[in-house]
Length: 453
Image 1 (cartoon, helix red, strand yellow):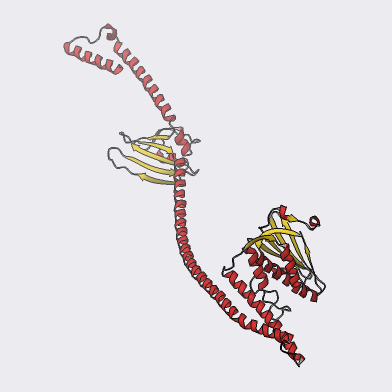
Image 2 (cartoon, rainbow, N blue to C red):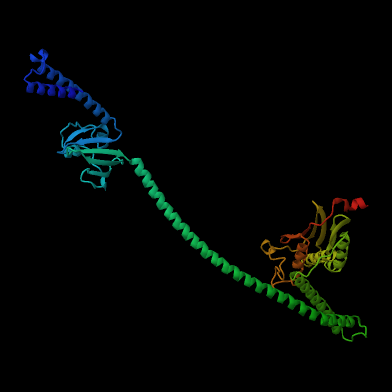
């Protein structure tokens, strides 16, 4: 507005001079123009100072660093952020100081990397990143002014750099993880292939083992069947000779020989029968015939059958339990189990010992225990018992005859009933074989000897 007034007054003055007139009236004729110029200059100075202060405050309030250098690269102005970033807060900066001097008085950057060079001759701009000694990162952009000076604006990008660095580290870790996953996948594929091959080998070996086991069972069954016919003849003829049905033997030795032949034939027949039973069980050809009845009758029958052998060793046989115990079991299988366990107990019990059958009902299960006061079994040998042909003593040290099939047959028959056979023993104190059957009926069928009396 002031400039417009001055321009109008100058135009009026030139027009008046061309017309030979006085440009201004009396107010300016006597020193008025000089006074007006002085007032105008004062007003312009005040306006310039206000604008300058306003600009300086705006620059000082910037969140970024700001520095203005003239065409000779001398300092024109800068804000507090610039002094803070470059360590110049305690340095007295004044306009006119060279840029080299200013930067030498501050903290020198650890690294400075140009990321963008000028591409336009009209507007030259350069960007670079600066790493300060305190770990902060600055993004500095410098642009040329029309007068040839330089405007330098710096932004704190420490958070962005850390985030970018973290992203880079995460990407590296991700690449490593992906690489590990790929390697793990390849390893799993290799293991899978190995497992497939092992599974095929296992299947082939299992089939071969099953075929061999089947062939063994068939062979044992056939050979045992073939042996039983002549054995029956041997046993029968030895009995005839022993009883002298066709006349007495003149020599006593012949009588002893016939007795030995008879006993050996009976023993061999028992072995063959055990082998046949074990082969039939392994081949799955044993079908249980469950019947409902009093199993105490089976106990009495088994005790009578082994009483003769027990009497020769003066072993006391006894039964502890209910006088009547109604259950649904395979009577033939139960009889074979009890006979095998009683025979083992008597065999390994010295003279004057005790062998006891104990029967109880426990939570709808039948518990049958064969307990003896025999030689006992070491703890590390118990795990062998119950396997076919397994014995505690070997063929060179054993003092009792037998094949070791009796206990294996008993265990298999108990398991066919869905039960379990366990062995507890202590050396020189005795052995206790427990058979648990899940087939006992409710307690209404259980009657003790006292109730029966």
